[in-house]
Image (cartoon, rainbow, N blue to C red; front, side, top):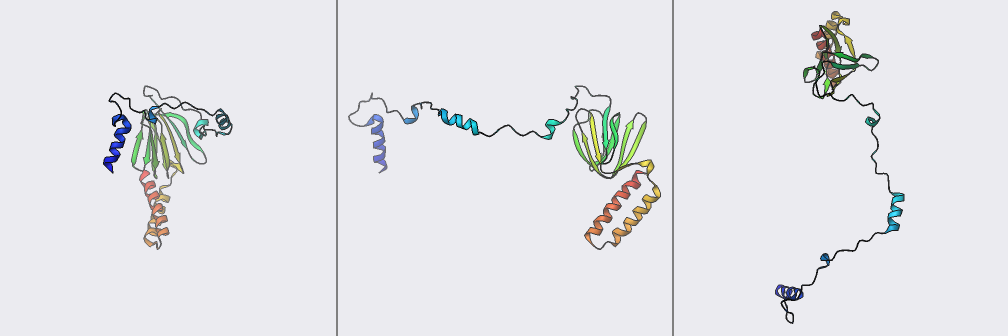
Length: 205
């Protein structure tokens, strides 16, 4: 059967009897260019009902753009330090900020690479000349931008000189006792958080 099929194919291409060797092969349908056809009525109807293909605008489209990144590293770092109820520092130029990131203490200088860091309970220090202002933060995030701007958002923060060391020691002792006597996972987790926060407070003093 395969031999017969090959013979029929050869004949259809001009290799059979009764045809000369110079006969032109038959053109395939794919070799013939298709005539362009356009249904004008369909195109007009589609333009009337076609959905809007433009992407929706995000909140970033309505934000005021940041200052462009300078080709040279500025001499100062602009810091914004905000809490849910107030702004501690607003557009202040400083020399350096040391933040308590979850990966360890991180110093931020002008020209720092763009970074987002999660904060853990610890000491946040703002260096301005020979002065250093220290805050204890319970947690939050720091957004370091490539144009030497730093936005620090904390859940709670208090200047270190406002902290009473005796209350910190008492709180650490109370939570340590609660952790040792906890009977459920919830009580153990709550006590552990208290121990971690008061330990960081004690280390910051």
